[in-house]
Length: 184
Ligand SMILES: [Zn+2]
Image (cartoon, rainbow, N blue to C red):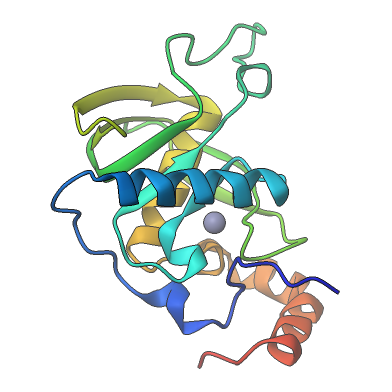
């Protein structure tokens, strides 16, 4: 069986904090392209460098517009360019309003759990050309940005789970512990 290059729960690489990137180089752009390739292969919509054993502060996203609609069926983020690499991302604004929805993660295959996050965020980052961008995001894109930023800070889906949800998924975690090195 082919093994995925994406680290799964229990791998200590997932708990590391990312390091700010000094300059956007061809090497970094190549990393972003590799990450996008792995993300598409795994059928995900986002991937952070920590998930493939890197510590650069970068994540990639491709949130399909058709999957990111408001209550009236209109795109939540009509101007958002996808796919996009977010380099040295920082959230500089977040709504008080929150939203709760099921969330998955390529590092937790098969696990979906409700997570409450800010409904809207403003993120500042460098794009793959090294230009500063500020993006206002809501809906699924806002959720995905917050999820991937968590990875850059060593925070994982499991940290957002309620004790009840953890119990519900106890069998799954037992499986993870068997298949991977356990983190205490
Ligand atoms: Zn994830």
